[in-house]
Length: 327
Ligand SMILES: NC(=O)c1ccc[n+]([C@@H]2O[C@H](COP(=O)([O-])OP(=O)(O)OC[C@H]3O[C@@H](n4cnc5c(N)ncnc54)[C@H](OP(=O)(O)O)[C@@H]3O)[C@@H](O)[C@H]2O)c1
Image (cartoon, rainbow, N blue to C red):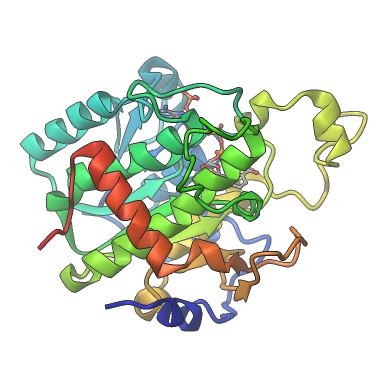
């Protein structure tokens, strides 16, 4: 049984040959992924799109579940070995339909990269009534991985995109849907991103006996469609762009932003570090829950806490009716 002390030990800083500016292609250099099937959510925009391009270039077959299949087909035109299928993470029935189709096809899966996400949305609900960011970013991905669990091959990895945004909030188990607390779009994003990290902890604890490992990542700051809900004034005030619209030079390109997810998907160093949260193709340790510096690196304790991961797992089983790796 994995403990929080185990997670803290696994999370200890780890330097690698890669770094802040490493690109997706550089991480996969020399790797032949022919014969590997990967599922990449959000694989038609931003970091997911760069992830798909790099995987396809390395020979992988990639399935991209998309809530806007026509947009996905257009974005992925010319990328070899890619198939688009309809799926809306904000509707568990849609996720169930996609995973049922995959099970019927029976293809073994080597990699699931949960790159889809929404950020700082106005208050909205999923089809099943969950706060949109928690429901889409976490519960949709939980249902996806649970529905695909029987197809995950020995050695498979599941990588979930978290964010330094997890610093904003732990999972608010007493009020996940903001029914008694006033809605705050950034707290809701923080909760969802803490849930993404805890999902990796909970999944790895249950699936590692089957040779399957799970990780979460902070990709860095990258200007993509993710910021679509932020007014220009807020982007300037947070110094994400300057007054002329130029991104902060410390931001990464999309190709750089996709590297850590692919490192987590392939690095042999991580075989003994299941459930960890990676950034800049490395590990940066654990920071206290009241740590405020967003630039220091490190995962907050609440995002690798095993009790919180178990509680989130139980809630997710209840919400989806799916209990993968129950034994
Ligand atoms: N960019 C950053 O600075 C940054 C920093 C930290 C963490 N992250 C994380 O990185 C991940 C990727 O972000 P990104 O920057 O690549 O954002 P992006 O360009 O906006 O891409 C997000 C993708 O998620 C898809 N998606 C959203 N809601 C969905 C739903 N209900 N069902 C299916 N797909 C859905 C979007 O599809 P549509 O286009 O159809 O909406 C889009 O393809 C996110 O999880 C984000 O939280 C990003």
